[in-house]
Image (cartoon, rainbow, N blue to C red):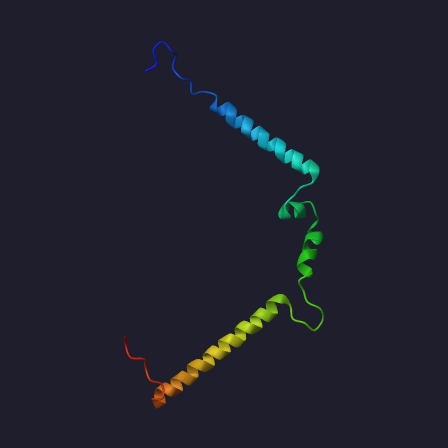
Length: 104
């Protein structure tokens, strides 16, 4: 109980929020003036061609495969290997060489 004292005021919330927002904006503007920018923000100001330049650098020199091609080749080999293994297993199953594991 508050005897004789007036009730506690719960106001000024919006004002605090606004102050916070303004503070954030001010900090952001200061950073822009200094020139501190993160990855994508750095790229944003550049033209399309300049941004593309980064991607082109990942291409390999003459005679070497590009990044994606190499991976595709590996995957293809892996798939063929798997298919070969399946065929072998089928043959063994037919001849009865492959014994099934006993249930635990």
